[in-house]
Image 1 (tube, rainbow, N blue to C red):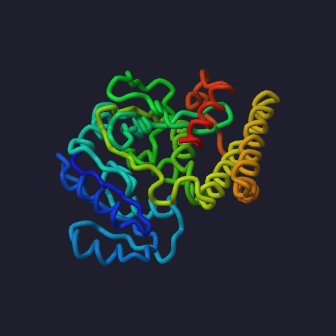
Image 2: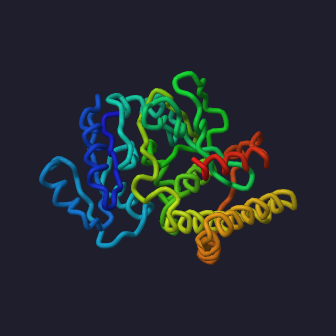
Length: 314
């Protein structure tokens, strides 16, 4: 692509951001980097201006979350392709070149998923997202050995927001990210709406980055659990998952009750409960359609529980 806008949201994570930007500086294709600072208090804005004067800065007056920040970063550019990179991702030199390639060859593709590895580059962190029938989102090929695993794009719902390319016209079609989601599942929600508008998603297994994973917020902190729970309940209500039929409703309720019970008994906290109540209330009046092609029909109840357990115990 002639022009690429790379949007990097950040909040109080200057060391991570600095490492991420160093890898973006070494990319093999031209790009414009936009950092959206979500009201950091660690001097991010000042350090960025001093050490990376060529990087555009969008400075938020308060921490309003991922979706608001990314939408602001997207609006600050005009390139036909928008790439999202988390501040805790370190990109290979040809990451951007490989990631945008599918958009050049097929005009029906609106989004591309990159491949994220865990530190050490021996296992997969994610190769996009897949959804079960309750719209629970999972990282595809999570913990698969690298490079031994054979990666494909079957049942790829959309890219992870940590390493994604989007056609700007596709984002305009759906109105960008849903700003009712503060953090988590914004990428899954966007993937559903893009697919519903007829846009396809492709995978780029040779577009590789290393994802430190939850380095910005802290792994399984109370804040993380409550925020993720709010996003989950919001999507359940927005897409009317409990109206999908008795089997899906029972599956959904059983899975959600299991998560809430585990948080209460094992972690001795109400974060998962508080978040779900808050998210359900926020979802009142929201409405969207689930495209059948976005759901992995092979991801059944037992497989979904196994993936939730793997994610929680990682």
